[in-house]
Image (cartoon, rainbow, N blue to C red; front, side, top):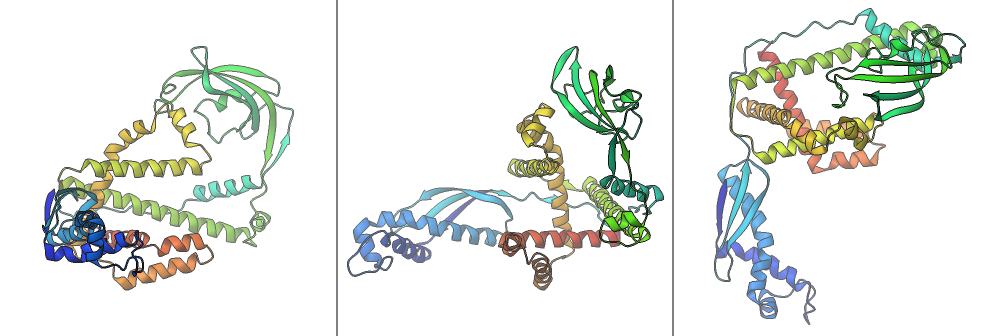
Length: 414
């Protein structure tokens, strides 16, 4: 939308005074402290047009904000400003080009009943977690025998495609625990039965959805030289294992805590699944204005930053990750576009439902949550500073409002 804003001479007076005060700070005018010279004296010293030019910096942000409120517009990002008239003894006229929040015509969002899945913790879930804890305290011993499943092996590895070495496909003394499935399917099985010092060449077909496009669905040749075989001894799953964690005296207490943790994790995942299913149902029944390009680009950038953080948390350099994908940041952002648009639409749905149902976060609710977070991070000055920031308060208010919308949707759709 383009807004033409006209600011009268009377409305400009306080902004002209501000501009004159700012200009006078840069001049040493006898008898006046910096910034305190009169408008007339500054006008005499620099000319009135100079004051008008400086005044724009103060007048536009204020009057633009009032125009947006008056027209009840919800805008995205800063406006593009074009001054059309600026002259002494005349009104200020400027054009503001703004991107508006897309309109949405909500479809039915009540009474379509999305079932929640039953949540239960199975014994195999607990056993898997217990085994992972056992691995933390496992001991290794070098053995002189053939490799079997569950062993750790160190291998020198060379990788080829059509007899040509693959970029970054060579490694020395690479450790692999057989059975953990960290390599492509079929790789680990080819190492079983080998002994230290043996070399084996074999071919494995890579999955079609493998992250490296140049290898996806291809037959890749490996040459593996067994440098060492290690038997892994897991500690027994008993009270001594629980005590090693420093939080439990008995294994039964550890097992109970594991069960509670798994239950909470499954509940959270089911909650997220249900929310996505609910939003997708509403999205199907809703109509949206065209999503502004600026908004899609902004969301794509946000998704890129999220991916970078995830990759770095796994101990990888993002540039290396991109190299392994044979993609650039621009390639990924293009691929993100459909999901970015979908994320924008879900955010618009949540906002519209909150508006339709008058769902708000009261100031005292926000203060209570902020106080809780400040208490939680009281020993971390950097985090508490972020929590105190106005931007974070707005972010937290939005998050809390979204939670309220989902609570409402759960009441009317289960």
